[in-house]
Image 1 (spheres, rainbow, N blue to C red):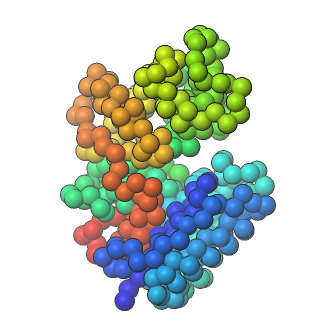
Image 2 (cartoon, rainbow, N blue to C red; image 1 turned 90 degrees about the horizontal axis):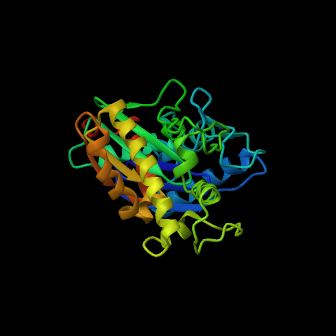
Length: 322
């Protein structure tokens, strides 16, 4: 039986899946991402999860035909590593991926992608029409996109295409992004930054609110949970809708997709408060055909399933290559 491996390396969790030639997952393993002390610990955790998923699937790692990896960035594709990941401790400066995984699986067919690129490969593979023009957008702890245009998944020379969260939406630079630059989409609307943005807005206009900005554990979920009950929380959500719609409009103008599929924890947990306001604004903001905007059907497994689809299709997600 032919088997294929998909890996999802996130800043919070790692997933590994083993699938058969029909992309049916037959083995799965998941664990929290080690926070150091170096990247080697993360590599070892990935290898351990691959072994565990293979064990559940009843196959040995050296019989796997190919592997697709969706990873946090930034990537060095030539070296097959993650370099200085922004959302892990500073001591984690390099995470080797393709070399160790290739050695474990005894195959050179190991495809490394940015996590959102892997996700668009998965979305395309599992879509009913296998569309040639689509975007996967994640609104989660960060913001990013995977892009397919004219049947070609866009990776960029270094594997870092699609970093749309670092598009400048606000030239006034009210918020500073985690990357150190001002006015980026991610600085306003990512799960990590929504509480910071809410605090800044409240400092500008101290509307009465049940939110406590002295609480170090304040999260984006706390703000969305007060929707319809707290005037300031509603104000924050309205501002997020403004920036998200602007970001999606820019994506549409840049890539002309037929479908924009949205995932990530912020969107998956609050679809009516995140997607609906974007839909409501797009007709007024887009000067070309407005694509279908939908929530991903693959949930939290979109990246690992994209890894499997990459392994099956030689890194493309094109079902015609099966």
